[in-house]
Length: 277
Image (cartoon, rainbow, N blue to C red; front, side, top):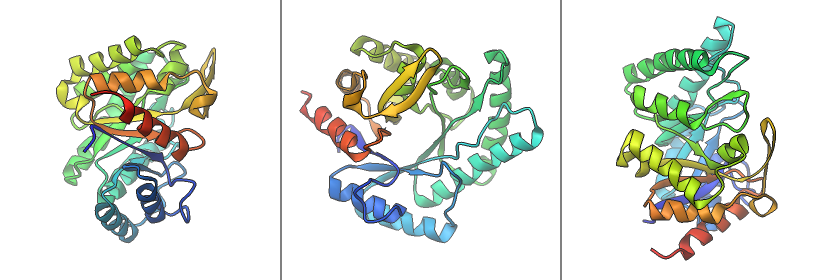
C-alpha cells in the first residue's frame, strides 16, 4: 500500500447518489483509497446504516474517516451550547466507530474575543470530558481537532499539537490549506517540512505514520480563509506539500476538500505517484 491514501471529503460528485455506500463505490471506481463521511449538518445516520457502511468499506478496501457537525463551539458562553457541542462530537465518534472509521475531525471552537490561552483551557476541559465518556464506552476512534483557517477560530498548529500531547487519543487533523490561509505563509517545501518536523518532534514518529490531512485550493484575506477553491485556481503549492510528505515518509489519509472533490483528489494522487521514492 502507498504511504498515503487519497480521497474526497464526502461522496464524490460522480457517484450514483449522495449516499455513503454509493460514495464508497464511487471512490473505488475512481481508483482512490479513502473517503471522509461528512456529518457537517448533523449526524443523520443510524446504527443499522453504519453497520452497512462498514461492510461496504471493508469489501471495497476503502478507508473511512468522519467530519463532525459544524455547530461545535467548546468555548461557547452558554452551558447548553457546550453540552450540545460535546454531544455532537460524541455522536460523530459513536457512528464513525460503527462505520469502521479510525478517526474523526471537527472544528473545535471560536475565540469569541477571549485570549487564546483562555479559550485553550476551556476547549481542553470540555474535550477531556468527551474523551472520558468515549473511554467508558470503549470507543477507540482518534479525535482530531482541525487546524483552522480563520483568525477568529481556535485551531492553530500549536493549539492542536498541545491538545494532542496533553490528551489521550487526540491527534491533529492537519489542514495545510487552512494554515496557509491563516498565516499568509506556509506554502513552500521548506515550510511544509517544518510542520512535519514539528509534528514528529512533539508527537513522535507514530504521528507521521498515522496522519489525517486536508488539502484544497484556498482563497484568503487579512482575516484568513474566505473559501475553498480548486487547486489550479489558487496559489497553494500542492506539489511541494506532496514532496515534503513523501520525503518525510508520511502515511495516512489525504482528504481533498476542493469544490471539484475527486478531480483534485485524483490530481493529488497522480502528482504524488510521479514523485521519485
